[in-house]
Image 1 (cartoon, rainbow, N blue to C red):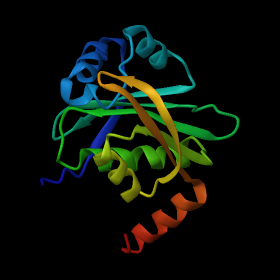
Image 2 (image 1 turned 120 degrees about the vertical axis):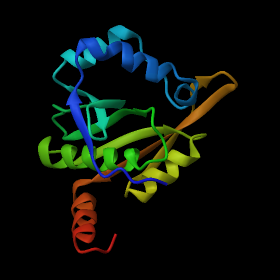
Image 3 (image 1 turned 135 degrees about the vertical axis):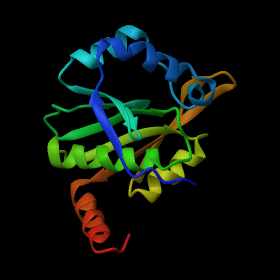
Image 4 (image 1 turned 90 degrees about the horizontal axis):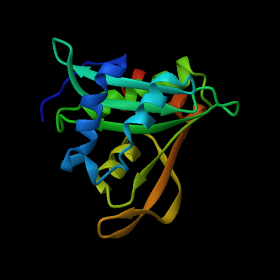
Length: 175
């Protein structure tokens, strides 16, 4: 596996939405997410409670995916990683992106809790999020319709104190 050390997040512009929609509609991604309508993405770009970013990697400004945070103004300091969709897989971009988003949630947005949900059939993502320090909180049984029936959503989170401990361990070279 190649290791890409740097990813950049830049605010999504309305002119990026054709790319965003194409990434969501890709059959490799579609089964793991519930795609949005263009108007939903437009709202997320414009509404201050959201942060909608294009993920860039490599030497230039090559767009490789997008991410959405929601709850950025949540009075309970609970920020959701609403969506992360990457075209380029197997190069460490997801890990770099999640670490950047986690740092942003706790350091920049003042989160107390950073959370996400993931389809139970997405076992690779579940293992990945666990490896990044997210803890399973519960299961929303058969809560999303799929082409084959229904799937459950697994709710996972990381608390501010857990993030701090993980960050300290990484800085000390333990993780």
